Structure formats: C-alpha cells, structure tokens
Length: 158
Image (cartoon, rainbow, N blue to C red; front, top):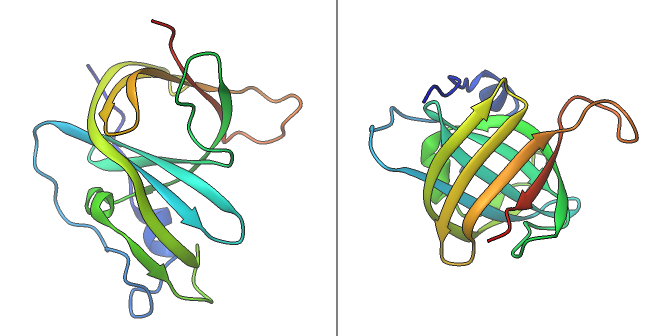
C-alpha cells in the first residue's frame, strides 16, 4: 500500500532545539509501524495522535481525547509531521517555545495502515494498551468548522 512521504520542515521550523528537549529527528528503520498518543498539557489540554506513516509521525491534535468506543466521534486537527523518534518523547517543553507544557505518553503500540484514500481518508488498526481496533480519520470539507486541517476521528463498530 502506498503511504504519502512526510516531511519535517514544519516541525523543525517551529522549534529552537537549543531550548527544547524534543528530538530533532533521525533515520527510521523499516519494520512494524507504531503509534503514540501524547497527553499534552499546553495552553489547553489535548491529546496528540501520531501515526508512523511515510517515515514520519503524521500528527493530529484531538481536543477531547481519542474515542475509546464505537459511536464516539472526535474532531482531530492535523498538525505538522513529527520525527519518528518523537514516539518515545515525554517531558516538559519550556515556556516561550512552540507547544510549551508537559507531554506524557497516554498510549502507544502497533499500527497497521489499512487504507489511505487521496489524503482524505485513513483507515488503520491500533494495537495499544488502551486503544485497540480499527479507526478512521476522515478529512472534513469546508463547512461549519473552517480550515483544511480538520478531520473526524472515530472507532469502527465490531
């Protein structure tokens, strides 16, 4: 299955690595893909869903947290791609830096990308400590929520 190749330009542009303990990024090994969900206590508490796709962690901020059961839908706002070694990051991003606040791993585990349709739909399976099963990310078209970075995250039934 094809996966779009990610880039870390946006990630690196927003950070001063002499001030933040976040990883800069390093080459990744091929093999089993992973995911992480960070609980991020920044200006507002939210959860960051990060999926290992195309050599980077494609990332979405989920304001109300990821759905743990079918029937629950959550807004997920796409953010810049992160380096794969961010998957193990926990710590404090100092004040004055992009994303300042505490970052903790909320869940992590294996990822299987099942389908990606024209950068508008992702179907994937998570095998984590808290989240298990098939999930969807669907890109929302312009409408009630302005912007082109808004997605809908939900867990499939059964």
